[in-house]
Length: 278
Image (cartoon, rainbow, N blue to C red; front, side, top):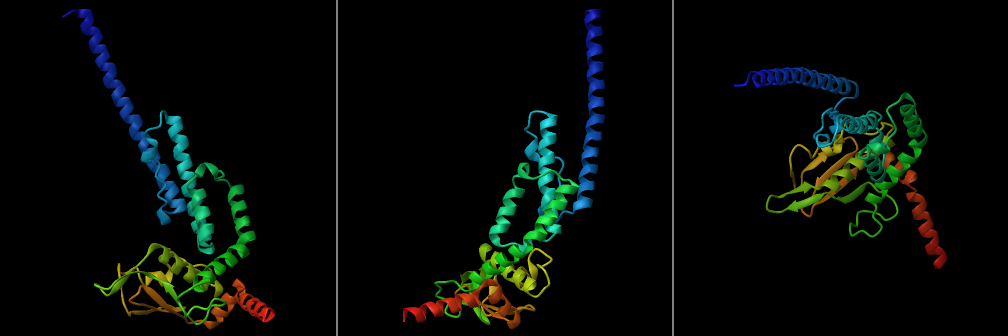
């Protein structure tokens, strides 16, 4: 073997081994730093609501260079941070379905969100306080419309105001199993109803994701027909056609619901128009 070639080969191998071990040290240190950063964010913001604060998300692996990946990771973390701030401020619970969808759309496009700064967070809180009355009225009116559909075959429901008893769609009945499964959109409606009655009672929105009303139905996948279940505000029974018969137990809150949503005005305006036509 050529002595000079053998020397070059040994030097190259030694450099390769040294480079590998140096890279190994740097990679381990890099992942340790990423894990430390991830733990710090999770401790500060919490992980509820699906916000994991992963500092090495798989969606970034295909990006061409470290700087681009770092920027994408920081956008990913920014969206999670604003999402957790919204949860901590109970903002989503105060909003109507349309407002929540708008908020979720913003959180899913973090490049449109402001940086995480004291000024930005203060501005968010000030905006929330300013719009609190609007969010409240929108949420109440949404529930009011859900409980008094304008063209409903659910005869218990008045077209003009909400009464003590209402009927709403609950889910998908299965007569073979004598039970019904609560549908996704129906679940959202129940959560809205629970939120609004808590707010009408001065309690603020429910503190957990499902709330007391939906928690009645999350213990099993299907709800037996005829079962009667209760919370502080509602008595509810699921019938064979998949409808839920709900008794609203707090008539003072029902009255307030009608007042805030304008139901009484709607009824009086309709009666006035009828008298004018007559």
